[in-house]
Amino acid sequence: MTLPVALTLTAALLAAVLLVHGLHAYVKGRAERTALINRLSDSGEQEPTGRRRRFRGVDRRLRRTALGRRIEMKLATTGLDLTPGEFFVYMAASVAGVWIVASSLLAPFFGPVAGLIGLWSANAFLNWQRARRTERFINQLPELARILANATQAGLALRTAIGMAAEELEAPAGEELARVANRLAVGHSIDESLGELADRLPSRELSVLVSTLVLSSRAGGAIVGSLRNLTITLEQRKETRREVRTQLSQVTVTAYLMPFIGLGSLLLVDAMMPGALERMTGAIPGQIAVLVALGLFALGFVTIRRLSKIEV
Image (cartoon, rainbow, N blue to C red; front, side):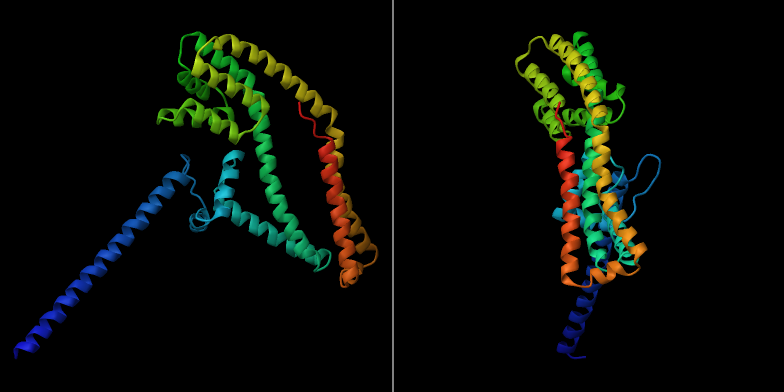
């Protein structure tokens, strides 16, 4: 065997060894990365009861986008036990379902319209859940102020009082205060932690409570007396809000009946004259008339909701 042939064989053997070693390192690193991602996903997405999250691949990809981050932010304020991936898949399935149902029952023109209404309804559902959770939190504010006043009167620090309130109160106040206590435990300031709470659940009552706690933590003062007076004020506002909501319940029901009246009218017309909607939406003037009618129903719904919305 000549020297060039020996050198060529040696170089080829060395290249093969390096190639095998490189492939082994790549496969091992990819496996470790996948295991790490699964472990982090399990720790963040698996509850103590053992329930595993669905659509984890969709969730990981969705969180990298602006839409996923926006959905995640909204879900964080609603208290729903859903990941952005789960909500997105359920929303897409619901939109596809209403699209098919509307196209089958009414006319093909109503399929895209129903899909858009489905997307709007998903966003409205998140807003409604957020408002509902905020309302429940506001109803717990008098008890929260009372616990903080008793704890500070006993000589406990504000950080300790917040942790105690998180353990004693039920959701959503207990969950939100536990989040604040966790942020305080890792070094965040009271101003930043309470400010994030006020941004997450915006309300006048919570803003007043947060301002009182922040000012007391900065400048000191009679925080116990302030919290006692605030407790009485919050109790009175709670009763006032309940009375206003009772008085406006009929108007609220009327606002939600408006869209159903329009849908019932369309079904009634199609039942009396089979195929009328399909013939009507088969021409441009008919499509414009339907869109104008839907817009007027939406305008009526929004107008009634605005007129019945009284800030207390």
